[in-house]
Image 1 (tube, rainbow, N blue to C red):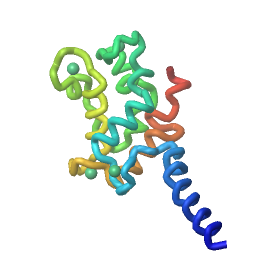
Image 2 (image 1 turned 30 degrees about the vertical axis):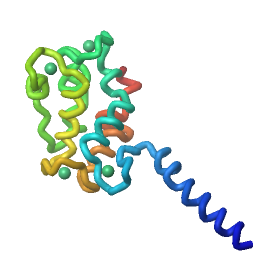
Image 3 (image 1 turned 135 degrees about the vertical axis):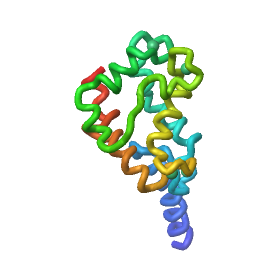
Image 4 (image 1 turned 180 degrees about the vertical axis):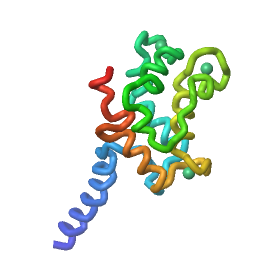
Length: 145
Ligand SMILES: [Ca+2]
Ligand SMILES: [Ca+2]
Ligand SMILES: [Ca+2]
Ligand SMILES: [Ca+2]
């Protein structure tokens, strides 16, 4: 009987991380309650919002693609609420006229890391969840794409 109990407990312990990974927000891979920039980059890249907005599939967002995805998008200001969202040039840190995925990821990470602490804590994560959820910035990509 003891063996069965232990086995069940072991199975449960194994099942928990797997269940957590199935959640839509699996960014916090080391489960410390914070999303660091590495964790964000990995999760955000996987969600492939970048690829969705890269209409000509050249691996870069040009200003036109960026504006279509964000600044010119209907209802975008409402989704951003109080948040400041700059223009293309604010995010094109090397000013080559394109956003590569790293520039793009960094731009959004900085949006969510509102206090600039270098990670996204639970409070900041609420904003991220709202953006990823239905009616959020990334929530209705399919209907917009
Ligand atoms: Ca973490
Ligand atoms: Ca492109
Ligand atoms: Ca660039
Ligand atoms: Ca923070």
